[in-house]
Image (cartoon, rainbow, N blue to C red; front, side):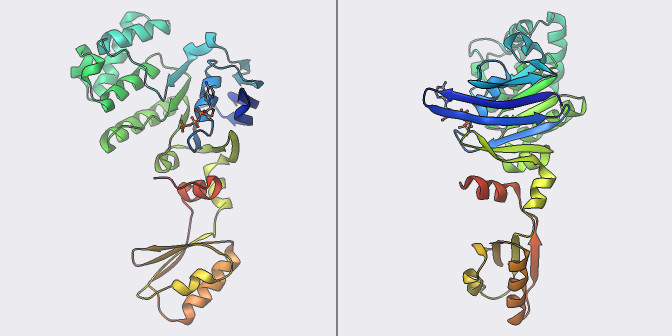
Length: 299
Ligand SMILES: Nc1ncnc2c1ncn2[C@@H]1O[C@H](COP(=O)(O)OP(=O)(O)OP(=O)(O)O)[C@@H](O)[C@H]1O
């Protein structure tokens, strides 16, 4: 285990932003940090970076307490983008790379590799303010990885990117992981988290309500979602005991039930009234799990 978060609490005055959080993030893993707005993700990241001091508890990276002097091994893409609008892309990246202790020659080599990869080589001599929001985002990402950090923290990396660029960034992140980088990222896009992470944590009011391996988490929610399709109304199922949610969908309904026993009763009930095109107990999506645990619908 490389990143260890040990019973961390962060208070701002009377309010608790992070509440006794413990996590272990294995080396070379991609870890998803989820939670509603204000759940404590950014505060946790800032403590990981040594930018904020926990009120209680500590975090260690490879067995050593994290402090700001160790940030050369850490890369950070902040949620509030922090580039200097008037600086040219090249000067900006050289400046930030120098702060990480790199030689100018190496910065330029890395920068050109990344600009090419993101299909923005023309922007090297443009000022940041001349770039679209999505392209600024790519430059900010390059700034966070230019020094080849061991631990990469990405706060909402996909926000503001169109689908093609989100895909480019996703591939870049997967490649970095393959090369051994430990990556922690937050996202409100459940599909991205589902695609990229083996482990994750869902925070609610600074406390994890779900944490662990994605596969295991999904397993523990199994047998709870049923899709039924057919040319008739399924309204009567709505009031059966154990049905927690009833949603109309294209060609049928999707139900959330308490457990597999309820699923069996529903199956018998549906079969009584004749033919259906589809009856399936579905694996829950991360979106389903998030909504159940956090109680807020997400886009
Ligand atoms: N510097 C600060 N001073 C006071 N309160 C703060 C400070 N930073 C964060 N908070 C509070 O801590 C809580 C957690 O905020 P945080 O930014 O960590 O949430 P988040 O999960 O990153 O949310 P979002 O998804 O909206 O980015 C919020 O209630 C916020 O108002």
